[in-house]
View 1 (cartoon, rainbow, N blue to C red):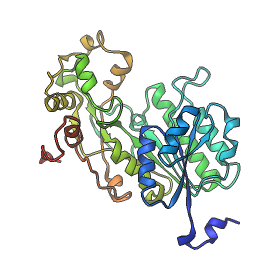
View 2 (view 1 turned 90 degrees about the vertical axis):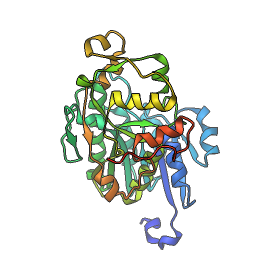
View 3 (view 1 turned 135 degrees about the vertical axis):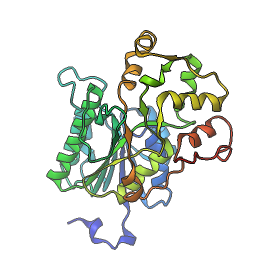
Length: 321
């Protein structure tokens, strides 16, 4: 018998488990703890994170997604699960797979699965669409091992949902930015003098402010429709070079050089170049109508302005947004 389900709603206290409680996880915890109606827990493999989690009002649970035996205590523990842990960087035997997600779902399937879960995936699963608009009904066209692992993780989550009768939501997340997030703005890139592509070869890039993402995560745990995919992106429609130029102007720094792909390949790392190899624009209608999220930073200009030391009202939102 599910005792929690038998109690009147006013007496229930949700038990929320955050897996992958880094910067976004801590922000989501603040949103979830705002009403103090939930018991917040977080899985961590690092004893040094225990004090950080406790200071944030989160109960730390020691366990390692790379050591499935340490996850046994998670079975039946949470009524809702927010899974934000990334796949391993490499997997020598199965480079396309995410064994961490598989280990988590197997552990949760041992007893009383959560009533709702949310998995934070990436918009990289859409692959290159040559600047075309993409919504959640579009198929996946992952073309890199990093994106393949995310596709595998999404499939593992859906298998868990179907096998255990535990509905959930997949959030597809683009580049995350915020002034108070490590590497969360283009400032460091600008300081290094890294180039961007010439406009004719440039790619559309997509963004979400870390605080808006955290709010989306919290809302999805309660409002997300079962077995749904939601693009968590803002309203910005901007080429990557224009985005970096905008940041440079706001920070009072020189705009980056513009190079063609052949020239850029000589100066940029393969990882950086990989983000310049895919172009797509993402629709966010489900984010607004199903999760009913009102973006605090609908355009990157609003989020980057605060990073430049000017107030959020210093620059008005562009009229075309």
